[in-house]
Amino acid sequence: MKRICAVLFILLWTGITLQSYENRDTEKRTALFVWGGWEGHEPKKCVDIFAPWLEKQGFDVEISNTLDSYLDVEKLKSLDLIVQAVTMSSITSEQEQGLLEAVKSGVGLAGWHGGLADSFRQNTEYQFMVGGQWVAHPGGVIDYEVTISNKEHPITKGLSDFKMHSEQYYMHVDPINHVLATTTFSGQHASWIKGVVMPVVWTKKYGKGRVFYTSLGHVSKDFDVPEAREIVKRGMLWAAGCLNEKND
Ligand SMILES: [Zn+2]
Image (cartoon, rainbow, N blue to C red; front, top):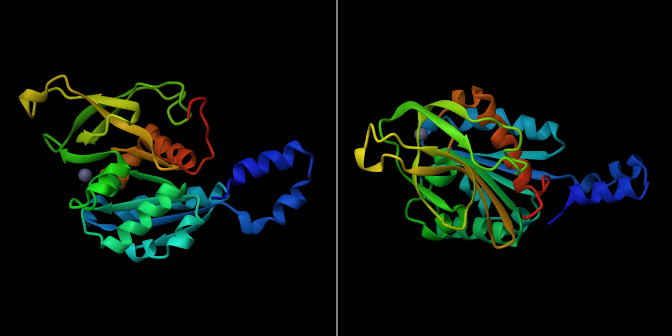
């Protein structure tokens, strides 16, 4: 996989002019957004928030609304980042294999809410890659708080705890996840989960690929909350290998 951030750094460090960098256009960072599935999550509207922003950061961005984009494995492997917003739906084994193979080889994967962690409920290897699966949002759209639990990681650094009026995702999660933010359940809508601290933002690896996930973003309006929007922006860059922390 291309590591254009490292290339840019080395070029600048060695004093090679930016002209040389511009001539390397073919190595521009590349991202594929795939949207679809349940329309209630406004996948296209959400992609339309983040795809143009990523383009402004210097990425070549392709937007697709078919999982057939996962069939061309060689092309997928050449990407820096895949962003998926596909809630529920179903995936063929060929499409799934393409995605798994690409991420395992080192392509970053990023997503939010049900578009990444409530997709393809029949596909356990896919869930093994993502690191979690939505199972409930007690009370539906409610007021809840998000606590930044890791203030050093580049995805959450400098962010304060914040409030959401949205679905508070209760998830089955992978112990390997590197959790960056959490939420605590009040028990008001399901008494037996009172006090449960649930991950809201995490990173993990799948093979060589970096996986970023946040449970925020039920609808596009949720990203009017500055912290929620910022977390997805930084998460995409982190998954693409453009933000590094000390202990990756
Ligand atoms: Zn939702």
